[in-house]
Length: 175
Image 1 (cartoon, rainbow, N blue to C red):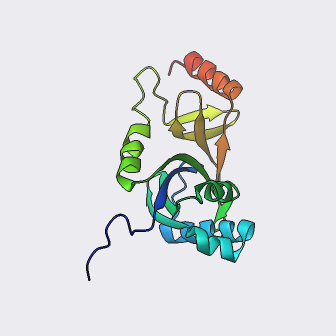
Image 2: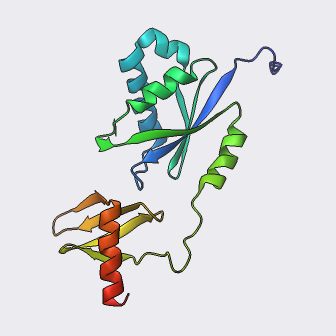
């Protein structure tokens, strides 16, 4: 069987999406079912079949998705309605749309946050109010942390005011 020339191939668009919250690493198959369910629930079976949504890969905190050319606007809208994947809260934030997978993989390496400078580096555990917390992500103005509990852990999303409180307590403690 010979390969179709580029003029006869179906045109597709590839999307790069960030998986929020940080630290959530869904399986590609589970994410595919969640994405397809979001598309079907919003547009119906006929439009979903015409759109041909697919999850190509999950690479760290990013997902590579595919759809037919011309349907990328509707696909992005359907992705914004996605809230859960296997009973875990998940949101997909589309970062880029391209005609090739290679260009999106280059963007993944460009998007990766650089290693924090020594003065910006966060300690691995902090004290917030009374509970000890563990830093999961530190982007400078945004911090995702896990509250350590006796029976379970809870994910917290801190605001700028919370960061100022933490920064003031770490300076006063001499950390």
